[in-house]
Image (cartoon, rainbow, N blue to C red; front, side):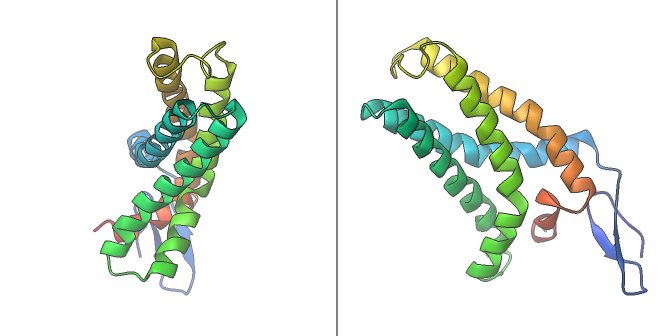
Length: 165
């Protein structure tokens, strides 16, 4: 069977092969999908933590936890709609998104923490929102090559692609 970008197909001899040619637009689309869930959780965590006056470390932990929760939930939503059971959908989401979300969370939290005063700036501050937006852009730009590499090997978002039809 012929291979197509981002897919694994049977060769007819009981083996599979994955493609190595993945476009940057495919990787960017997968990263944007992942970033959507991460951004929802990240922003919500930063807003809640800041509004409640939580310590910076607690705010970061809350943001990371919510980023994973929303990232997995968005992936599972599509897989569940394809008729897959909850446990199987969770396994697909974990396989598809764990590396991408982890890389994004390391990057975006490192950027926000590194910007002097950003974590303490408050919700009404341009510094708070600017550093948060900048951190998400950095995370997107640096995670896209990671996702491209993973998809080219049949990993990451490639495992979800079969459920997007």
